[in-house]
Every structure is written in C-alpha cells, then in structure tokens.
Image (tube, rainbow, N blue to C red):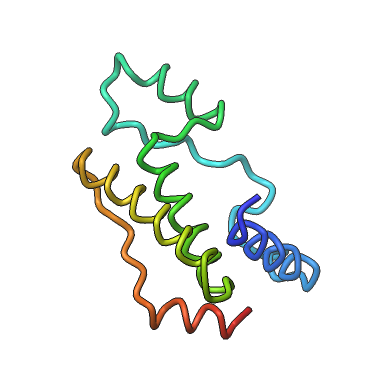
Length: 118
C-alpha cells in the first residue's frame, strides 16, 4: 500500500473512532448510482468491469508511482539513493510527456516540507 493510502486510512479510522461519521446525511442508505453519462453507451459495461476489477489506466498508474517516488525523495538521504529516485521520476515523466499526458513536477521546496512532516 502506498504511503498516502496508509496516511489516509489511518486518518479515516481515527475520525471513525471519534464518531465524526455517525450523523452524516444519507447514512445507512445505498450509494447513488454512478453517473456514466460521459461514457459512450457501448463502453459502459466494459468501463464498469474494469473499474470493479481495480484497473486504472497506465498514465494514472505512472502518476501514482511518481507521487510515491516524490514521497521517497522527501525521506531519502543524500547520495545514490536520491539520484536513482530522480532518474526513475525522470523516466516516468518522459513516458508521460511522450504519450501526451501531464508530468509530475516535484519542487525541492515541497520535498523539504514533506520531509519535515515525516
């Protein structure tokens, strides 16, 4: 599980223990149907199947990996480990840019702030 996922799960569990979710509107009722109006009708079944199987598009998987690398950079020491992480992040960004998707840019100041929180 990714670090961000673990942090989110921990915060959700703590809020649940404090009872912050007890009086939410719609509690105990079924979730509303998903809006698939932007998905062409002939692709909706395939979309639902892929979504319930946990599939995400490759570019989103690359973004997820890039965020994980950014978190590792925040806690990595100086030297070769940091250089290898930057190299991996550069390769991911190259793949994203070549496929026409946005790259993940991680400013050094952001990494320093994340490192302070850990």
